[in-house]
Length: 271
Image (tube, rainbow, N blue to C red; front, side, top):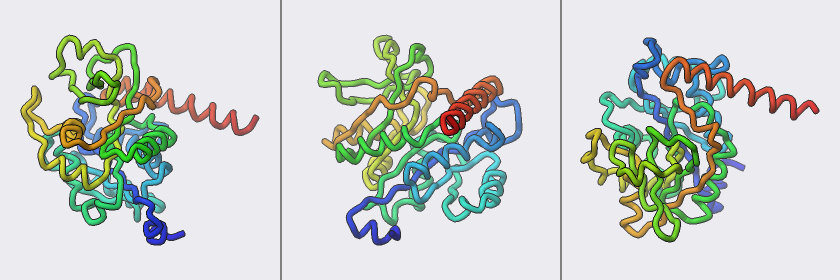
């Protein structure tokens, strides 16, 4: 069935915006952070594949440092060349600002699509986790949904603050968190799903009055909740998938985890 006929049948479209502009200064390399190879291909390729496997028909990469290298790579992958689009984030003003750079790519059909927002440096992402996120998002008729994770050492991650009823209240970055909030072990691994029109409307209202002076995508949740929209959170990300890559040691660790996972998949298929 063509995409058009499925949309006429009432199905919502699905796009993915992947943040891939960072330099990755701790990687000790001139290569853009997301282009560092994991199991023989750039880590951002794993994220693109997971989003597509979960149903995204268009992928927008927000690029910055080493933008041409990212463009060239995807132009050389035949099955992705028609699916992947690019938008440039020249100044790094935060995750909310990065997503806003993709506005022109996603606004045309915003009323009829949902959008994943993901990070290009998290190659351990699984399509089934994104499918769980999307199912909850659509099942709850939510404006914004995130997949969370429970980890023993939450240091450095945004914390998930829930209200008395157990519903998502807000996401607080480590730098802005109180001592009580820092004690929370439910964290934000940056797996988001939004109704695209709600996302764009809320992004326009995100400010940068925080410890980093940046525009955070996470503020969208509190804005929408205060508007009376449904926001949701599902503990769906296995703790071992949370590791993103910030330095060569983490790159090696992620590569090893993926190889082990691949062997288990192949072993399971051949038994």
